[in-house]
Length: 322
Image 1: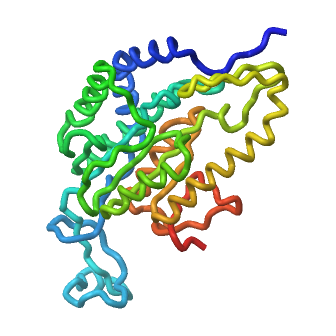
Image 2 (image 1 turned 180 degrees about the horizontal axis):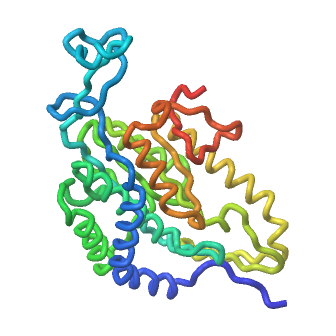
Image 3 (image 1 turned 180 degrees about the vertical axis):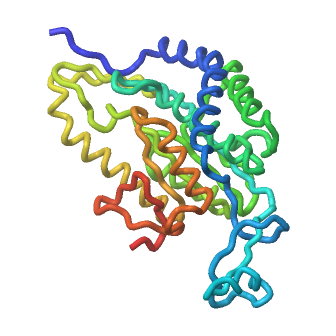
């Protein structure tokens, strides 16, 4: 019986890598489209703080100062209201899409490779942040900046790195970062959890808040193969021939579950957010959830109750979650 083959050869990977630069313009267009869709009806990353621009009224709470009370608004109600102004300090956001060989994977179920989806999400969240007046930069790249061409410049930097033949690492780089900035890591996180933990702890140790966007091809989670299948390691080149691929499904699923639990546990310990996103789902779903978290608009920003399995799809993971 003719077996299936899952994975790509070194030659196929090289062709895919060389094609990345050609695909970047279309990925930028798609990222812009997704960002505009999500931006429709939302107001960016507004927050209370020092500034001159009125933001919103809210009920008076214990600890609020009397000068902050808006007496004109309060006079028309039985409650006291605080007049909040919008925070006007520019915020800094670093994005890092994983472009290592494992991200080239695309099964017959998914419409695009994991790498393309990672780029679309990274570019789109960058577009939304820039629209909110924030500074955006590539982790390990040029300093964060603001302006209409920032995302284009990031894409150009990626294309130049690919053209130079430089290898893309599967773990985030470790540059010095500004305290109180934020960092978004978009990856399949297939490295050993302890190696990922070391990279994330370095970032968190600088006072940076992080967000882990876990990109998974649906076939990587369900292993929907039957019969004789040859699996080829994208990065290691190792080959495994399975006589009955369906017999591997249970053990594979358990190993993957433990791997994801380790990543969720890391996010919880660092008080970072974690979002799992499948490439057969619309990019806008993940982008909307991520934007809500960055905006602090979720109903409970610090923590949401995790599922019994410890895995979280659309919930904030933080230390002390009940």
